[in-house]
Image (cartoon, rainbow, N blue to C red):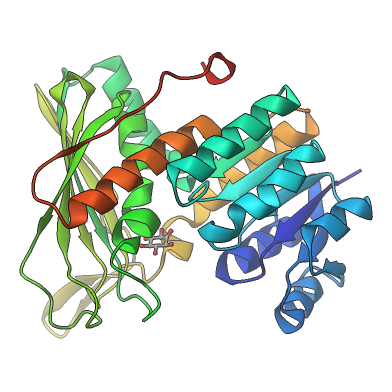
Length: 335
Ligand code: ISE
């Protein structure tokens, strides 16, 4: 029978997960929607064909309604859902970030280890994007020589008023903190933030765009333009500089149009389309693993490492120069 997945949080991402689980992921269905806002809960439950709703995860677990859980609440609420889900021994796909800071992520590591097995997959969906995966393979195979630099752009059309300065790091660059070290096969050593001329069109409380510099092990240099007010669309791309070649991923790939003396190429407007296939593959991998009694993909340890990088990145937002990461050795449970 289908894996009954509880979707916790019925906002934008929760809606995406519900739509996939109800429609296109084999072997799974929405077991329940967990959401304190009754209107949102009802709308998401209806989209899943009229499943049960609960205001609290504890009640959904007590009702025996779930075999697995997807957490799509905002980051600050992840811990309060993760802890009871771990206690219940269910596999869980937790949207990024694992939690907002290293201390709470460490508590999650402790709780997962106490269960005796891996239960958490963190929703760093870029690892399931075919182009990132191929770039990682190219690095590992060494076909273009040693990797020297990674150069990324992360551009959003606009952000809501609720998006704060530190979210440039904790909500957005959080993806690069996971996926670029994964591509390079090396951990982050330090993080630095350099401010560009401020875009007068960004919300008044934001100072951006920024350039985020990372030093990885083996001296690999990474730069990411983080820019959330570009207006024209959603663009995430990376160039890899090797000893003997250059590789590019994430180039525009939409509709090509020649009209009125101009050539244009359609650009994505949102992560929902840019990473649509990655979200599909991610959820499929989670469901397949859960049905086999295992867990795959980015681990809670990966989530913890990113939380440490984000903490350094937030410090680096208001301080010139690189901020070193202080990572404890990987617990043997995750090695
Ligand atoms: C958002 O939360 C995401 O995860 C998107 O992938 C990212 O591009 C955006 O900047 C974030 O706010």
